[in-house]
Length: 92
Image (tube, rainbow, N blue to C red):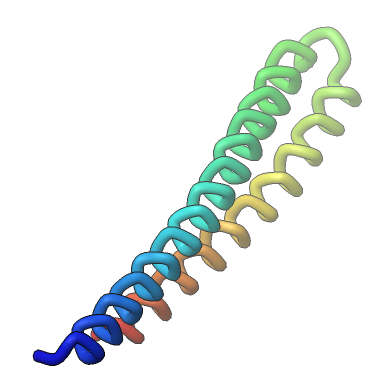
């Protein structure tokens, strides 16, 4: 292997590594967002549970918000899984 071939190989490896780092950073941001959404969903459900006896109308509103949040969360999870599957298919 010549020096030029070695350098080209090294540059390709560095590019691949940079791409993987960027993907990992994106995934970490997505997971952080999903974690925050799960925490907010948990809080909404707790609020609804505590309000159920005191103020059923507010409890219903809290459950409605939790339902909407869970829909958004499921969408994000599906989008992330689809993206991961596409990346894995490209590598295969």
